Length: 161
Image: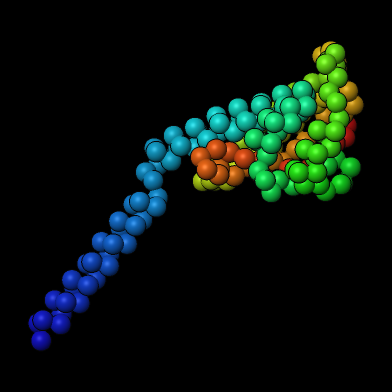
């Protein structure tokens, strides 16, 4: 009778051991997780800066690198559009080389959850340093795909005084 009890104990120990191994691989140590999250936050802040610059200069190539293939945006006027449609419209629009209009981020708040991130951005369009209209609040959803952050969704609202 001792044999079945030994097998049961061995089976339980093996199950606990495998479960512990899986958990240890799946859940990184807190210091590593914090470091990875801090790295991701820096990468996302840089991506938001690149996005503002690409929007300012109407850099369609850079926007297509930052936007995921399935990117969707809800514009400030309520229109919903795909990244592909926005890129087509921007390609048709000839940027004015003498334009002094830029997009500037005043505040960027980043929340990272693994390979997904939520970024809240308050920004304004400026001409020669002077604000044009009201600032905007954007909610950006980023996903890390193939080792780099790509914007998958945006919702933009005008900030009312």
